[in-house]
Image 1 (cartoon, rainbow, N blue to C red):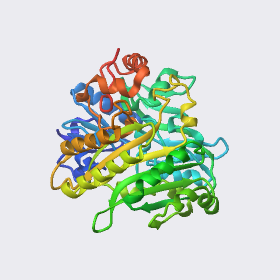
Image 2: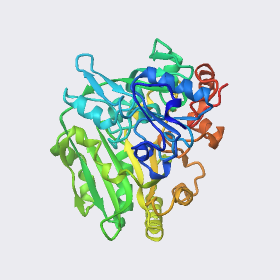
Image 3: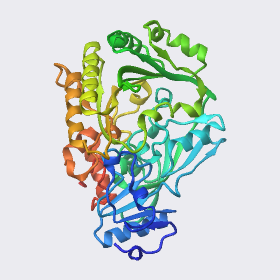
Image 4: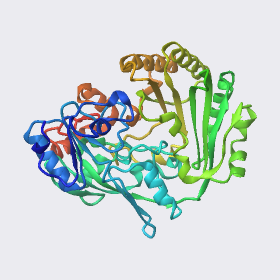
Amino acid sequence: MPNNQLPAIKGDVLTPDSAGYKQAIARWAANAERDASIVAFVKDSEDIVKCLKFAKEHGMPIAVRCGGHSAGGASSVDGGLVIDLSRYLNTASVDPVKKLAYIGGGALWETVDKAAIKHGLATVGGTVNHTGVGGLILGGGYGWLSGQYGLSIDNLVQVTIVTADGSVLIANETENSALFFAVRGGGGNFGIVTEFVSKLHPQRPTVYAGHVIFLPSKIEQVVVATNKWLENIKENEGMFQVSTVGGPEGKPLFVLVIFYNGSEAEGRENFKWVFDIGPIADATKEIPYEHLNALQNAMAGHGKGIYQKGAIIARPSPDLVAKAHAKFAELVQIHHLGGGVIYEYISLKKVNSVPADATAFPRGLEANLMINISWDNSIQNLTHDARKYAGELTDILRGDEVDSLVPGYSNYDDSATAAIGEEKAKAAFRTNYPKLQGIKKKYDPENVFNKWFPITPA
């Protein structure tokens, strides 16, 4: 589609014959790349309004890109228009007196973390810091600080949002409150957020964190000890446990990523039970706070094929975790895969203290489980196969308990297309789905925004 068909905007417009087009459609997950007809790097709300009007007039599907981290392709579109916030709406500023962060809709979490900690402040952000703020917040937003401060949406004070009809609205608890309810967990279904305003909290400059590596023979012992620890988990600590492979020989490993919001001395004492089990490596230390959300960056690099599946696990079973680990190692070896099976343990008391009907995001949850399968997408797109393998792994972890694994954290799911049908959205939003349908009818009756758990207007 010719460049000049989109009315002039302040930002940049790229088409398939433009220099930089391939980079513009590239995504964190290589298999999420789609051949857009137009990529518009917008500078402000006015640019977005023009793009939405153009897409509507020409019957073009749209996608919105912030950080481009959706493995399911929510930020990409074939033959349509990508409204990309990442180039110009990517900053974060801090009001240290009000303890508020003003965050561009296309910013990355690294930008937020660094801006806030300069003032001794922090908010709940993504555990991979090159993740986009927009997608993570709109989908709920777990982070290392969730034990202390809840989800990212629980710290959200206000958004500026462009809705499907081109209105530019402020939404908060008192102004457009139904819309504010919807964007706190309802994803991009209701418009394009150009600015998030989030609460900040006092944060010490350093924390104790890092990787502890065990051989697979220790898995059952680790999980037994973990279940005991979870009975009294504190709000200022957390742990991810990862079945993965490492080193040039692809050796199966069980990796713990631990976090304690305090000094190294306090952290080592707190996690003494971990070291008593006998890891083969300990890379934990006191680190600058702004490095915390980069600990998993190496495991989440750009450019691979990625398939993600989320679930919720009420209580990890030592033997089933060990079996799933062995199965994952087998899949990796046979099919030349990467990634990991990730169990996320953070105190959820604060998260679940929020009433289920207070935000679009459901509550009453248990620990997150994410299966992340990666491969070299330049050789072959293995999305279909990876979906099958992820199903095999969740079947193992389910054991004999049919309902032991329920649909997981929506930001970890692959269901990011209108083709998935309504059932996935109903499962994601649970009892809040009918209310969201009513809000959708008001703000997006034609279902323009339909790339992530699309909600059918009432």
